Image 1 (cartoon, rainbow, N blue to C red):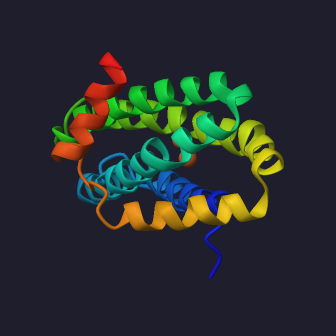
Image 2: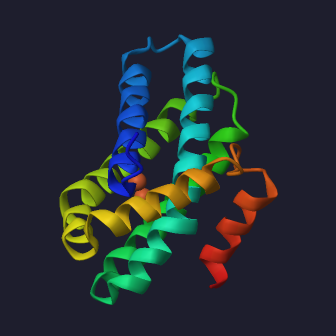
Amino acid sequence: MSTDAIVLLKDDHKQIRKLFKDFENAGETAYAAKGKLVDRIIELLTVHTYIENEVMYPRVRELLPELEDDVLESYEEHHVADVLVVELAAMKPDAERFTAKTTVLIENVRHHIEEEEQEWFPKVREGLGRNVLQQIGAEMQKVRKTAPKRPSQPSALKKTIDAVIA
Ligand SMILES: [Fe+2]
Ligand SMILES: [Fe+2]
């Protein structure tokens, strides 16, 4: 199985997008279903942003300094998503603002995923090449095993704090 970093990240994106669609297709008052979908979205996003923050972004920043601005912008977009995720994780699915907050999270993450896939992943592929991307991917798979799944886990909180004070 390929460990190409970009292939792995795009595969995550695909799963996340599918859950977004499922949420949008769920009925307005399908609270139990929507709550489950949001739980799953939170888990996938927490793991995904963690491996990008811990492995992909720092490697790209180090190896391709010309992409520094893209990386910094991406960290900020993750941070906005983190804030929404923390709030959603504490909210009941039948709360007045639950669907609105999820919708804003979905809009933000879709935009972010699109920028990664359309704008900077192609530059990263060109700049790093196959072998380096395979190494980065292997490292991400290792980190994924111990990545936080909920925003309240200490390693996820640390990531959020680092984004503010770093
Ligand atoms: Fe990202
Ligand atoms: Fe991503």
